Amino acid sequence: MKDVKGTLIRIIAEYLDKEESEIKETDTFTEIGLDSLDIMELVMQMQEELDCKIELSQEITTIEKLAELIEKQ
Image (cartoon, rainbow, N blue to C red; front, side, top):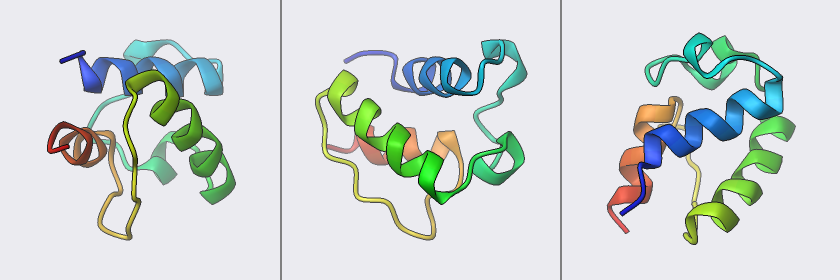
């Protein structure tokens, strides 16, 4: 299994043009500066890179929670 959290952080950091160290897995997507359209675009990229299906819900608000969802698959 790939390093899911690390991959998610890298994808988000590249998208936001930030350093990976600036993004914490416990930050909410809103705190990181992502809106719903950003998240939809990122989810498509994440699904492709991690070869998974991501079904987002209101409870998935952090990288940590998203990684847990992906790892359960």
